[in-house]
Structures are given as C-alpha cells and as structure tokens.
Length: 399
Image (cartoon, rainbow, N blue to C red; front, side, top):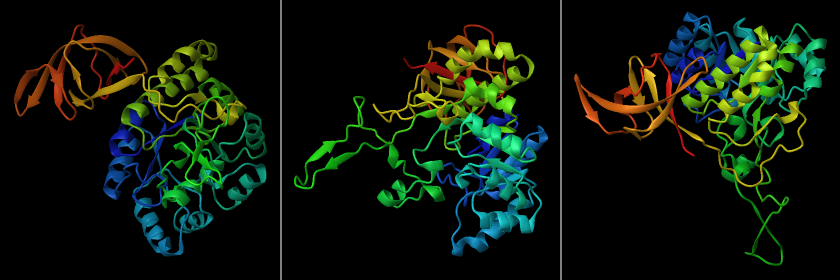
C-alpha cells in the first residue's frame, strides 16, 4: 500500500519524500485545483522529480481542473512540457483532459476524486478509456471500496485517509463561485462553507437571525477533518493500492508529521499488525500536534457526526518553530533561550529538550542572541546532546 503525500512547493516535496512518502502529488501553475498551493514552475518540477526519483519515490502531477474551450491549447502545451520530465502519473478529472493526455503519452493516468467515481461500472469505463488508477469519491464506505476492488482488481484504487473535507459532494461546490466569484472547481475556493450564516425573515428586512442547526451553534456547513488512521489496517486488507493525505496548501510541518505518522502505521500493519493496534492511541496523539479541526473517520467509518458546529477555527496545540536543513536551523516562528521544546524526527520519534544558547549566523560570524525570529538562520545548543538529522523539526507546545 503506497503512502501518497501532498507537495505544494519544492520544499514540501522534499520534506514529504524524506519523512516517508512513497509518492507525492504536485501541481503546475495552471490546471491543478489548488491555486494557493504555490505550485511548480517547469524548472522546479524538473528538480522535484529528479529529487524524488533519486530516492526511488514517485511524483504524480495534478491536472484535475475542468477545462474551458479557450484553455485547451494551453493545456496541450502544458502536458507536452510536463511529459518530458518523466513524471509517474497524471491526475485528471476532465474526460477531455484524459483523452488529450492519452493521445500524447503513455504515462499512467489517475482519475481524480473530483470525478465522483462511486461504482464498479464507472471504474470499468475509465479502465477502457485508458486510466490505470481511480481516486475514489470520499463518500464511499469500506464495504463499497472493497466491492469495487474485488470487481475490478486490475484497476489501482486510491483512497483519501487524512485532511480537510469539503461539505459538498466530492468537492463539487458552487457556494464559493456564487458568493465570491472564486471557483472551487478551478482551484480558487474561498472556503465559504466555513463562514457563519444568518437568515432574514421577509417582513423584517435588515434583521438578522442566527441559523440554529442544533444546540451546538450555527456553522451548518463546517465539516470536520478526516483521520482514517484507526481504519488503515482495514484498507490494507481490502487491497487499496494507495492512501492519500490531503494538504498541498498546508505547511511543511504538517506534511512532515502526518507523513511520518502514516509511514509508521503502514510499516506496522505490514510487519507487526498487533503492535499497530496497540500504537493507535500514540499515533493519534502525534496527529493531534498538527493544526486541524476535530477528527472523524468520515464515511469510511459511517460516523453520524461529520460536521463541527461550534466554530470553524483550527485546533493548534503546537507551534512549528524551525527546520534543520544542511546543518543550520531555519526559523519559522519566534522562540527564545530557555524555551522547553520538542524535536521531531523523520522516523516519527521526538525528544524533549531545552534551548540553552542561540547563535545567529551573519556572514562568517556567529552572534549570540536570546530570541530567534522568523527567517533567521541559526545554530542552537540544547541542554542535552541530540542526534542531528537533516530536515528534523523544532516545535513548542502552545497550551
């Protein structure tokens, strides 16, 4: 079972690869349904694919926007340019995009979750059209996924296991487009479902009334985040080929932690299933240290409570402070001498330490400072000697 992680930028791609992903998915500047992810230029994509392939990892390119007539020629040129970089697959939702890619290259084609594939016959139809993998709709249960895999075993099946969920059917939302002019199906969703809504009674113009869905509050469209870790062994038993973490617009810290946790989980399921069961609480505790909304196993677990009514805010128990890269710490958030912090390694393990001394690098000089600020490049002395590892993370508890 492949672990597939998001890569919104070149740095995030390298983090995902180094923290245990078998493959990553990345988008170019157009056609990738994540306008705010940063995305890749052709030059960056070349470097990212080269880096992943050097470590025997795969890179899939998301071209899953729904195309308009005036974009077809640009899309064809994009496919030509990207195909030369030798990616391991294209992810598409538009059947016309599938046809264009298949006419130009034999690079594998994956059908995006945006295509809303929910049944055996649709999987068979896409197989005939030349697709090699289906990213199933998120509305399916474990039973339905198993039925599809048994009926079409030659088709690779991919399932989302972690991250934000859309309140609309397979992400096919009109709210953002209607309210803000930002089209969710073309990569620029304004997340209108996270807003707070009121109703107006027709005879009381200007008088706003809160919508009371139930005793919890008024965020009637606000979904929880998916966390299918407790069901991962069942997906493995079904024969799911790839499990996918959502989050191309999420931070490098988020990608590092979620990737490392699910890497650990998959390895345990393969080699020591009984230990996986015992370690689920520990692994969930680690996932609680990234920014997230309350978790749910979603339709996979057939939970009744998929929405979170009290607030649309994220739960943030830890702050990402710095990334250790090429022998120095790159600061992301402020911290100071004397802080009690935690170091997180790519194998999913962590160490609690105290910061004893901070030295800012300025040219060839090292200047001792008491507070590190974002974008500083520094060296740190801790209260204990720690093993150094490229791309390890520094974080601090916030509550």
